[in-house]
Image (cartoon, rainbow, N blue to C red; front, top):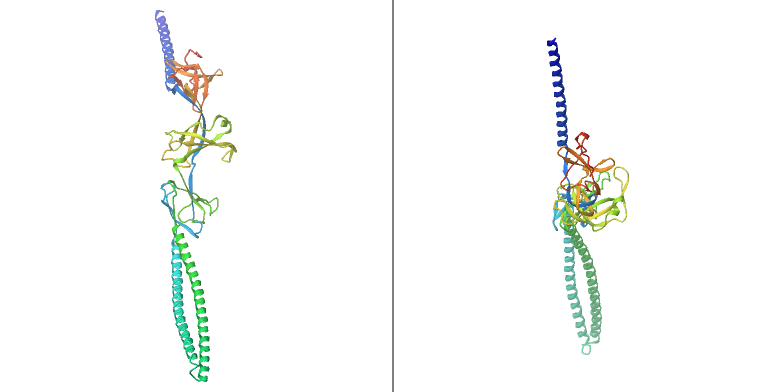
Length: 423
């Protein structure tokens, strides 16, 4: 009997100890899980300072001033044989595009040969004209001498026979006629030589014009940068819109066609799209914070210069949207920035001094009211706050102190502090 009671007692003792150990293990496990949930939640401190109310938009860098490079207008068959690397920096006066000069060089040789031939013909005509003029002068002098001799013979009529006097009169008439014929021949030779020389002079001048034009075309085989900047080549649509690519070596350019542009890097600006609902919140002159995707670690200060008066429709992927264009000039552009780079522009609508700001992820709703979860030693305590301003990433609130740690994720119910003080 006593042995049986002793066994029962030992059994109940063991069961009691087991229950106590089990309860302690459950409590310890709960506390461990609770402590782990407290430690694993991400937190962030509430920051005190100027809170900037922003209008966030996206856009790309553009240059308000740029220079265009076009192919020469009066040069046929232009083929590109060399290009400066696209996107590289160039200086004013630097050669950026070279065309094939072989055809113009061959034309210059031919035109130069034509010019030499025309000049030679002109020189020959001038020399022949001089010879003819000298011969005409000699013939005219001989004819004049014959006339004077005949007159002298006529003056002897008083002392010679009548027949001799008549012969002298006839000789004088013939000499005067020969003189007139010689003068007419001289005038004819002079007019003919002048006309021939004038014609050859025109041919020589035309050949000289062709040589000058060809030399001018050769000088246009190199395009130089008119200013400092970055060279950007335009698309070549000669193969159709679907196959359009930037100009490259081997492409043919049409006279006067645009080949490239050189934007001035000192005039970089952010061209952004502003949604219609945000248009009334911004004005020209507002401060802008620019972040370029290629350099996310750097924030650039800019000023909103201009807002388009009308909306522009966008036909990108998705539904058709309308937005305003806003242009903000960058005060100190980074030398690494290039037109066409994408980025974001935060337009400062207003500034709230001394505001308490928290990450947008730290605000939650509890019983229909905005709350944050403050981290305490034994969990997270929900605290009701008043939202004074919002940004995509930050929220300005009232109701918590600066430096308070707020949870960035909503804690589980068992991780909350047992004291739920809304204020």
